[in-house]
Image (cartoon, rainbow, N blue to C red; front, side, top):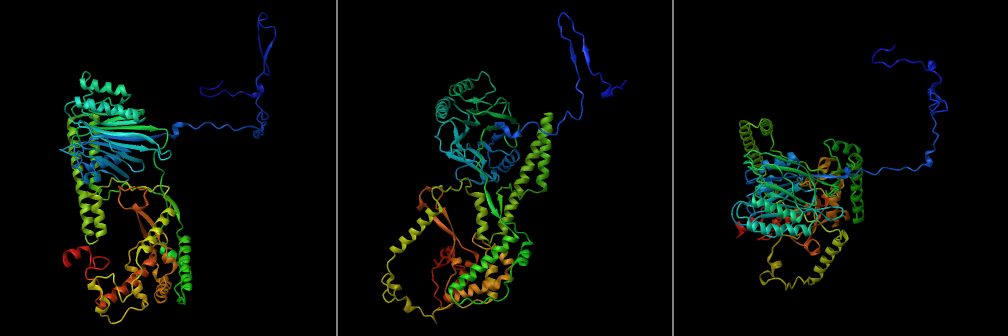
Length: 636
């Protein structure tokens, strides 16, 4: 006997070798015998009896569900974005929306402060303000990894609409269209007429459409005449209305999500406190069978650490010893190439190039411990109200959210004020900060067509320079400058100088170090090492650099490596046609050491002009303390 819960221990050798089954002679005349299988070690062969090489591998088809993409969309009637921009920024970041539609922004034309504050890092926005009167305005904030184009819609008198189209980056075909609508309360006859034409046109011209917004139609009322008429219009053109719950604080269903040819999932209506809006936040997902995000961008970077400079010096061949002065331009070119190759190979050993994916971080440097604590408190009160549905917790949540919003606004204002104060003498940083705050940041950088290759641009710019040179008249003789005005014809005779500038003097090493140290750390892709690293290791490489610069000044020859530049074509204005070559201007980026050579020459030229009092009187640029402001305020 075996105990309960354990298997009976049976001996394999004590089993009967055969079991006789009694069969009725009337049914079975053949005696049936059953032999149980006796397990031995010979039953399990270690060698395979099948040759797998003769079999064809059949791979299962991949599941399409693994290739799907879920886009998360949000909709909210914000009722004035101006005082709630920071909170909207938080909502988008917390929920990780791909698209966020806002109605009633109340942002006027040519005002971008609230829109810039509401747009997180890594997002862009499209906005259509109300051109006349107060209120209104529709906006869509979307991830900049999506291929988005904004299309101009017809203007309607009964509702406002903003249209954007999402393009598949692979097929270059339209994936779907998104329309954000706001209909103000008022007479409905004109709205029914205009919206029926609008919806019918969308159904004809588009396969996949999403329409979201505040329609101010009481869908919670079964017998509402406007609702029944609106529903019949949707049914006639094939649109589906997906919102079933209440979307307003006063128990109304006013915000709708309409789809054509698309199925949405996980639609949630999230009640908000009236401190944000009297409308509720609608969140839903849209599933696609293919990826509509643009391909991730990669860049090649080096990891430069504080210890990189010391490692670079340890691996660098001996360059601190004096280098023989080149006697001709060829030797100068060879010395320049040798220095660049040595620096480049040493840097490759210390900090090799690595391919890294470009990721955008949601930066909020003004976020501090106080705002973090207030945000956590507001969230706790929000969860408690949703759990209990008590008005006391709703009031507490509202007060906590208002306090958090005010603290966040104050922290951001204090951060920007400090940034402006610290850079009040740095116009470049100051203007950049002000531009990011108040100027339109919605425009994407125009993309250069693939047909305009680097060779096409180079030929165009070279031909343009050649044409300009051909149009310039041959140089007139110095004795008869007929092209000069009469009062400047005798400029050479009237200008008294002690002596002409015939040669450049070599720079002392200390003066050259001062020029390099004061130069901006602008790095070109042609540089052997980054300019910041060059300044850190300058004591061990100053000798060859000094030899190259002084030899260039004495020989009157610029090394060939210093004549190379990286040229980037930039569109002159954002609204110009990107396919026309004449709409681009070339911007060149020179190597760092070549700029040092230019600086050395410029200093000697400036010193000569200043010493002989032959500076241009009305010069308003490219000279210290002679900006355009100086020309307007002082010279005039």
